[in-house]
Amino acid sequence: MAVLQLSPRESPWKALSKEDLEKQYSPSRWSHRLNAEEVIKAHVQVGTEATQKAREDKESVLDIKYGKEDGEKLDIYFPDKTSEDLPFFLFIHGGYWQEGSKDYSAFMVAPLRAAGVAVVVLAYDLAPKGNIDLMLSQVRRGVLFIQKWYSSNRGIYLCGHSAGAHLASMVLLTDWAEYKVTPNIKGYFLVSGIYDLEPILHTYVNDALQMTLEDAQRNSPMFCQKEVQSKVTSTCELIVAVGQHDSPEFLQQSLDYFQQALRLHGWRVSFLEISNVDHFDIIEKLIQNDYILTQVILKTIFQ
View 1 (cartoon, rainbow, N blue to C red):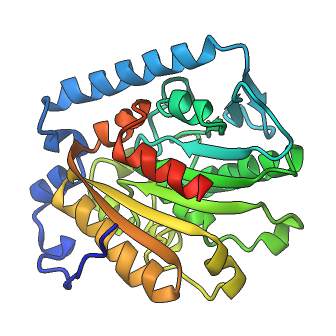
View 2 (tube, rainbow, N blue to C red):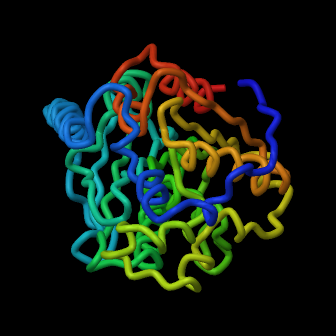
């Protein structure tokens, strides 16, 4: 994957009018295929059909409790041929931390399971019941649950879409020594994510979240990078992906995070801008074995 030569932001978000900022952070308004309402409806439909099909397989184990809270459940889709050292692909859905569901997020199960990968789709408590600190702690508990129950795993690969990419990128900063268990995380796939939360404070998205400036800064992986052990950075592969038809702000956030946070701090990271996809079908197309992101995921797992 080509590494882009990046330049500083020419139009910082603070220079945008409120109307323009709202538009930039409304992903459904940027689709090249459908209008805002239709693209969301289609996204749910594609995900629901893929999930229903995946659940028809006898190797699926659903609604496993990984914690005490109501939202702390996950589904595991095992491949036909199981072993003690399976790779696990753990998916965190998007929905601006207040929508979305594991029940229509199993897009990638068919091609990954066919290749011998166990797929985990994680749920978490959405706003307003949950706040971002709670959601992050839940995702960490989900990762630890997989590590403890499947301790001989070949590797755990986290993938997040949109708000899910934000949560996955915050997991990257975890000091696992505090948990007395270090999960065998081998890779991250961060798809159309948000890595600086401050612009969100000034949009409709924060109506349910009720984040303060301190909340946003504490939970912005763009600015929360810290020193990490070289053995971690050398063994973990990161892919930052974004769609050609994501909004300019979403694209810029991915570029900035790739260059200014990850690559600058020594992570093994690649950037991928996927042609002719928007914020929604960039993840929907994981149902296809020959889709570029599907192939990148499989190559990373089995390299």
